[in-house]
Image (cartoon, rainbow, N blue to C red; front, top):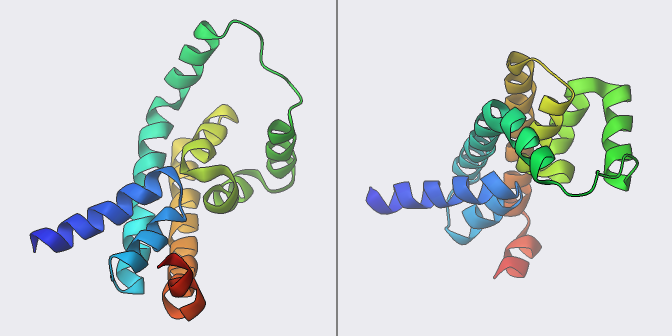
Length: 149
């Protein structure tokens, strides 16, 4: 029981920083793909929850500590703004796991002043869909398992 909980916790923690870390950890720890998907989604949503409530304070802290003004037209900023203009919060949410990471996606949504309810709805939908897809691929494709080992 205790070891199973630690496995779940390890997968969730791996997904809080980089979403693909959760499914890889799930394969290594020999969890089923459903367990891996659920734990990965929970890990991402933990990051989303924390950063949605603390995101504004993080931005204010960075602004106060920054010595030089940030670049207005960096490559990452342009990509984020283009996605925001085309798809809104749905695009940001669905590209958070593969592109923005669970750390940058919620902060980006907060920066665009998206209501928290929308952030939670679309980020959780994205986490579940990506969690199921990536976990299934990682568990069913034998070459992925051989590559991880």
